[in-house]
Image (cartoon, rainbow, N blue to C red):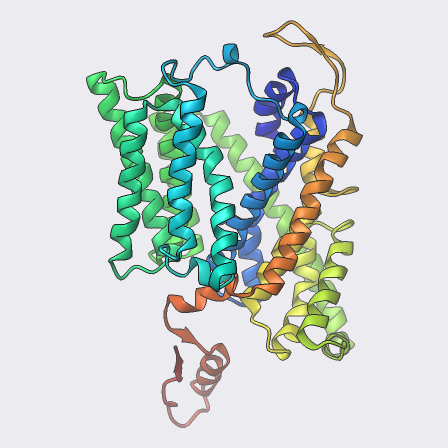
Length: 482
């Protein structure tokens, strides 16, 4: 949020964006990191629910993607019906685009490519995606429309950075790669997404290198800069997230490889300095101490609460709510939403989740599904006052007094706290809509079960208990559930 507030907010204000829209977009986009892997809060959620981090990541992927589509859809509606709130950049500001590419032609190419990829998604050519959300014609229509809206913005923008011939070649190559992967045994899921994204990034990097070495002029200056700047961080993300998804490394090992990779990138760019390393270590220590003390306080509270059998009372209260699973989920989400006004994500996770998890398990609710629902709900704690961290971060970097823009020389008015708060309201509503969608369509989360063999954790625990000293013989292996 701070980075985007420093980089993007002044540009949007310079070209006449509505301050509420600009503030809301920056704050909301910053909170997407809490629901899209590799999210630290998803790791905490998986730990508190005693579930696999990989399963939690896989289950949260489609809701995170759909939430991004809903955000993009909202901006599309605002820019369509209130064009003054999100005007396009003037031609003189587009200095790094391909000057031979006309905007209309770029939009047409982007629309054609977006329609093609939306067709792949709507017809189920990306295995498991349509069925994971809403099967049948309704699922095809919803996924197709959402994919077209999101991809249109991305691809029409990309078409302005590439020559028409290169854009068409790359689009056809990606289209063919998807169809080729569909002929393999790789199903849609973590492995599919990681491999597809890695192949796409690798292809872009190869094209950029060939373009620079042979001076072919296939890319605009901006496109070439973006590739060489973005590929190393994306490779670092793959080193952390990809290895966890594929199953090569645990979250701890993935984090360690990410740290080593970050040091190597800094060394390669000549930016590895002692002061920078000391600052990063100090920030990590502060964050770790912050989480540790919350954990200690939550544990003290839990032990006291458990000592008076409070957890049994809460479990009986929640499981006796009218409406069964639906009534439980509605009541719990309403409670969590209210508490999120006063507690941050980590406090909620360490205090509330251990009380809600047993009740959800007793009602037969899949805990990965339950965790993703709560993760999306708790995401609102970053967005609404009085303790929305994303709002505070943006307030710290947004202009508080009038200033002169360095490019245009115009006098710019400040961004008020009220504008930041009101700008976040539509995105909080979208997040609540996303909570309802995850509840109504659990398949978008529970598709993680199709990834392989699932173990009954209760049976595994029983077998380990029987293997403890005092047991006369080793028990038979636990039953596997497919």
